[in-house]
Length: 324
Length: 301
View (cartoon, helix red, strand yellow):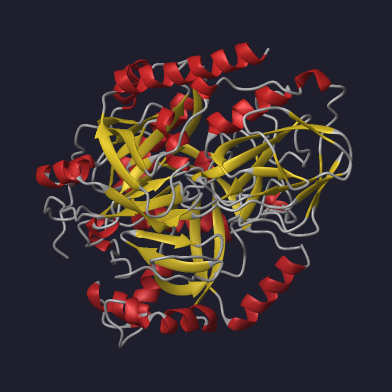
């Protein structure tokens, strides 16, 4: 089956669960930013968990299906229409040859996911189909979709029994313009003064326009560093450290003014002091925030982070179980 | 230059990077010794093939491990890392099977010059070039003496990252000879691909064009990243540099630069490189004498 791309939307990319094991080369994982929505999409259409789908950012594309297919839309509320008729989300839908999928304006969240039975069949690059646009690899020709592109899907067989399968309302996330993200304080957090760490945790930060797959930049406060004689190799600025690795989800504070949380297309290392890391369970929600949304960071310990991770997995398992 | 040069290394600092990473800062200050420790520890960890470990990332004075915490509890990993740390100790007698590589670079090339002139308003000293500024603050009489120091001794690749393939390089010279420069006051929005730059105590070759804050000195004609893997050196990996490589940055003129560029473009370029066992102790004891030996391996036949 082939999907033809009309207008491509603001940023539509092929993504799967990510490209792991290459971080030491400077290669970030890429992959779906909101893995929960992405994965549930695959459950709905009966795919393997890591089948590739489309991540649609802020403003959706126009897609035409050339054959019968089973699809599902999850994630941000960006109301889909098939041939102009409003269609359901978080539900497996049947489309016929010539059907056109379009989207209404974004109502909440930031990223919608399209899952197609059989998965988007682009070549594997380093064991993943995820797009990493910075150096143009993976996904469809290493870039966001453009008008005129054609995407092939994998063989799905007959999955008409999936049609109408629907995620229970209790498991459909709602996205608010105010979000709390849990963080484990650490890494080079000793570089911040105590008052600044308090301020970091007490400030309601605003997502700036600089919020993309590499990272989210926030404004709203000013943080100060503990004065020190800078160690050899770090450079003179108090915000700098001897260049080190940045975890996905890590928070850095260049110049003390605008914290950045690194996401799936992260730079893998550098010389800015990092002060903590957003826990894995909360990155799905982070990925659904957008410019001008407000965010607070709450400090948790490792046990709470692992408990949240377990709960998220259980929730996914329940969704999968219920969908059969 | 008023910065502290400790020979005794402090205790490592272990930290959780969320629930999926363990981050270990071996020291706040860079030194060859601490990088040898980071390499020795991560090499050992890699050999152990612990289930649940997905990424092992050595860096300059630290290292980072990504895990699947459903399979391996971060505290269990940290316990093992502390044992490995004890076994490695101060990495005395650390040997590294590596290679020494000739890396051509054209200093004061027209392309990075154009870039640095374009972003003068983001620099500490807008009235001079990045090289002139760096020479002055490091106490060199002239820009040419400064260039001679950079090109006069080989470098250890101490970390790969930021973007795919970018090598951080620390020069194999005594602490008091290490060059140190600040990054730009505000980062540039553009840096040419293959630019040779310097920030903090590290030289880099930018693997792709993009934003950057390092002082700009020159341009390398040969790539460090080849996504299409057309060149022979990239057959096994699209990234050429490896942690522990010894790079010798060798100045080339425009004629040689252009010749190498055309070899890269027609797919025939290959780095000059030699296999080599690097003895950390010898480098720490008498770096200059050891460097002469290293360069003999690279350029002698």
